[in-house]
Length: 72
Image 1 (tube, rainbow, N blue to C red):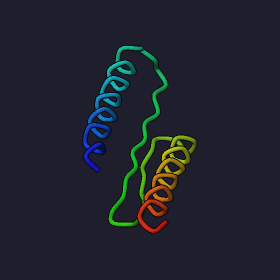
Image 2: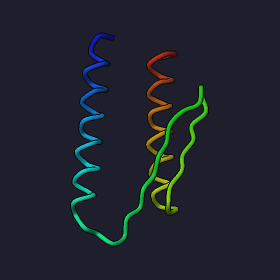
Image 3: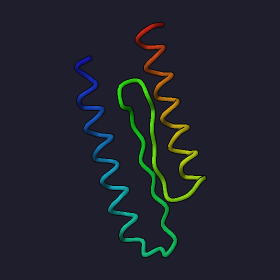
Protein backbone atom coordinates (compact mmCIF):
# COMPACT_ATOMS: atom_id res chain seq x y z
CA UNK A 1 0.00 0.00 0.00
CA UNK A 2 2.93 2.38 0.64
CA UNK A 3 3.81 2.18 -3.06
CA UNK A 4 0.51 3.73 -4.15
CA UNK A 5 1.46 7.28 -3.12
CA UNK A 6 4.67 7.44 -5.22
CA UNK A 7 2.87 5.80 -8.16
CA UNK A 8 0.09 8.38 -7.93
CA UNK A 9 2.56 11.26 -7.75
CA UNK A 10 4.43 9.95 -10.81
CA UNK A 11 1.16 9.69 -12.74
CA UNK A 12 0.26 13.27 -11.81
CA UNK A 13 3.71 14.46 -12.91
CA UNK A 14 3.37 12.62 -16.23
CA UNK A 15 -0.03 14.27 -16.71
CA UNK A 16 1.43 17.74 -16.13
CA UNK A 17 4.22 17.02 -18.60
CA UNK A 18 1.73 15.84 -21.23
CA UNK A 19 -0.44 18.92 -20.72
CA UNK A 20 2.60 21.21 -21.06
CA UNK A 21 3.76 19.38 -24.20
CA UNK A 22 0.28 19.65 -25.69
CA UNK A 23 0.15 23.38 -24.96
CA UNK A 24 3.49 23.93 -26.65
CA UNK A 25 2.66 21.87 -29.76
CA UNK A 26 0.54 24.67 -31.36
CA UNK A 27 -2.07 22.33 -32.79
CA UNK A 28 -5.36 23.87 -33.83
CA UNK A 29 -7.62 20.87 -33.20
CA UNK A 30 -7.52 20.05 -29.49
CA UNK A 31 -9.84 17.56 -27.81
CA UNK A 32 -9.89 17.11 -24.06
CA UNK A 33 -11.58 14.74 -21.67
CA UNK A 34 -11.89 14.12 -17.96
CA UNK A 35 -13.13 11.12 -16.01
CA UNK A 36 -13.32 9.89 -12.48
CA UNK A 37 -15.49 8.33 -9.83
CA UNK A 38 -18.13 9.58 -7.45
CA UNK A 39 -18.24 6.69 -5.04
CA UNK A 40 -18.55 3.58 -7.22
CA UNK A 41 -20.10 5.44 -10.18
CA UNK A 42 -17.79 6.33 -13.11
CA UNK A 43 -18.33 9.63 -14.94
CA UNK A 44 -16.67 11.60 -17.72
CA UNK A 45 -16.80 14.70 -19.87
CA UNK A 46 -15.13 15.36 -23.21
CA UNK A 47 -15.17 17.71 -26.17
CA UNK A 48 -15.78 14.94 -28.72
CA UNK A 49 -17.38 11.51 -28.77
CA UNK A 50 -14.18 9.51 -29.49
CA UNK A 51 -12.43 11.16 -26.55
CA UNK A 52 -15.44 10.51 -24.31
CA UNK A 53 -15.43 6.84 -25.31
CA UNK A 54 -11.71 6.63 -24.50
CA UNK A 55 -12.17 8.35 -21.13
CA UNK A 56 -15.09 6.12 -20.18
CA UNK A 57 -13.22 3.02 -21.36
CA UNK A 58 -10.23 3.89 -19.17
CA UNK A 59 -12.54 4.66 -16.25
CA UNK A 60 -14.34 1.32 -16.60
CA UNK A 61 -10.99 -0.51 -16.75
CA UNK A 62 -9.92 1.16 -13.51
CA UNK A 63 -13.27 0.28 -11.94
CA UNK A 64 -12.78 -3.37 -12.91
CA UNK A 65 -9.22 -3.37 -11.59
CA UNK A 66 -10.42 -1.88 -8.32
CA UNK A 67 -13.27 -4.38 -8.08
CA UNK A 68 -11.05 -7.41 -8.64
CA UNK A 69 -8.37 -6.04 -6.31
CA UNK A 70 -10.84 -5.48 -3.48
CA UNK A 71 -13.21 -8.41 -3.99
CA UNK A 72 -11.00 -10.89 -5.88
